[in-house]
Picture 1 (cartoon, rainbow, N blue to C red):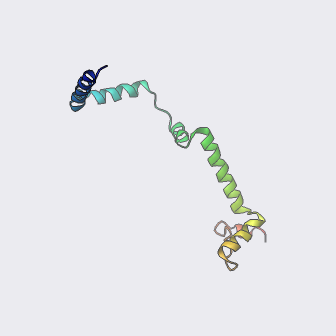
Picture 2: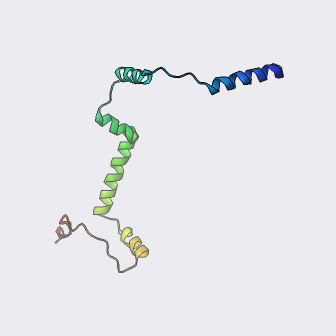
Picture 3: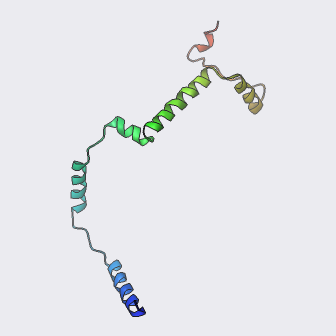
Length: 106
């Protein structure tokens, strides 16, 4: 195309951008209502699972929860040493006293 055609095309496109067509009143509401009738609502459980990444995300969350609880109840030997190095020797790790677990061993 020659330069004259490019200028004309650009002018026409600029005019079209300056005055976009208006959406008829209520069209967006009708469109949304129609979409909701076609698309079934997922159950609450399904929406919650989807919001955390599906079944893989739920599996990772359950695994992290179980491992965190396990480490909290029965920490490995090296954890206390690392805490002492970070916080100092005079800091003691709290035992789950509120649950009465500090009396289990006698």
